Length: 168
Image 1 (cartoon, one colour):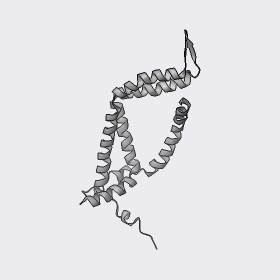
Image 2 (tube, helix red, strand yellow; image 1 turned 30 degrees about the vertical axis):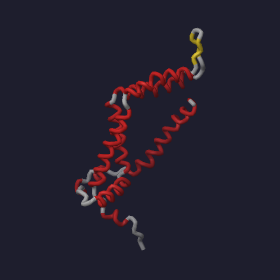
Image 3 (cartoon, one colour; image 1 turned 90 degrees about the vertical axis):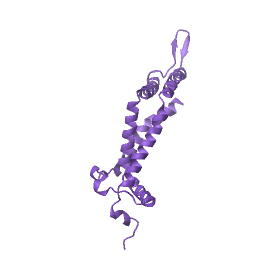
Image 4 (cartoon, one colour; image 1 turned 180 degrees about the vertical axis):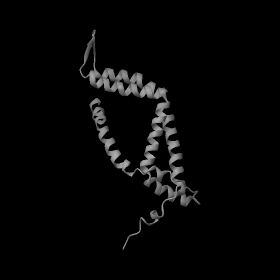
């Protein structure tokens, strides 16, 4: 089990590189993202839905940066969650690095399984008390308000109305 988790952890940098290549290629300039000339209130729900549909695709990279920034802010302002996460991740890394072989302490043999059990017995209650669910729901709510608010108030350019039309 530990080796599978370690293999997954090794794939994270490749996943981040692929994500950066895919999502960040859609990053729009700030002058376009904050274009105050295109701000207007939608006339009805149908227009708001059309704007949200277009703008979430068009500004997906920008919205992803906003969500990541909110997540980092939320994590940094919740000190106990930061400590609990650091304890669990750091403990996992240290156990994999330094305790690959069983060690003898007095009459007892301590294996990786014992160390993982101790790590989770201490780390999971710390994680529970740090209340990660409140951070998750705050992140979902705040990012929805920001993204949907921006997407519904920014008018798509005129060229967006002709994206589905074939040229002869």
